[in-house]
Image (spheres, one colour):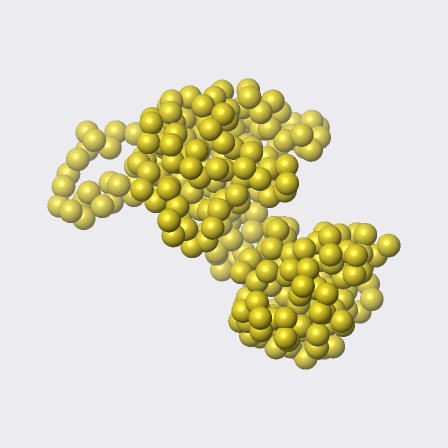
Length: 314
């Protein structure tokens, strides 16, 4: 069968797929994808390619769409289900990498690492200016706590932090097993010294962190977002930073990427990374191996382990 990979994949995963299938690797724009897709039985993407309703309607032979990562908000899952096309992902691939980045951002904010680095490179020696804070003893609030949140909680415990979370879908016994105390949304925002976003992007969570939510946070609190940019309203966050309503933010994801014109780019006390959560060699290798396995299963008539839309199988 024919497999199209449009966003790149680890060489080992491509080689594994080629043992049984014809594989093409091509970075296509929206128009080119519409023209190419009728010939393929499987499509593998990351976050760049948009698998729209129009793409799926033209995909006469498509059996499976694989997302070499976690979020599937760039895939029209409803349309895929209607057309009996399985959507699979690699939910366990990047959990550790994203968790480590989130902790890295917390340390960077608390110890002014990025600004201090620039200061020294400018020939300055500003020890008093960069007196920071310890993570030890602080309250970490996880806004959403799935696999990645659990990994963050594990590492936060090693720093001596108290971990609370707002997640309506996390069973209390699971939370307790991860050392997490479940609280309401307002309580989390009011009590946390660091609010770290780890929710999936859904209609419920889109824009859920706005001016009202940010106003509940402590003036000394910081916000870290390594999940999805659309969860946090950028204008509201920029205003909160500019007014001193919160002390700082670390942002790995944006409403629009690249974030040209984002108000956050000129806001004070914010550090950025260019959507690096899953950008480690280890995470990419795991994502490739997992998604190759999932696509193999779907093309051979078996039900894959990580099916996002079980309705595709009736």
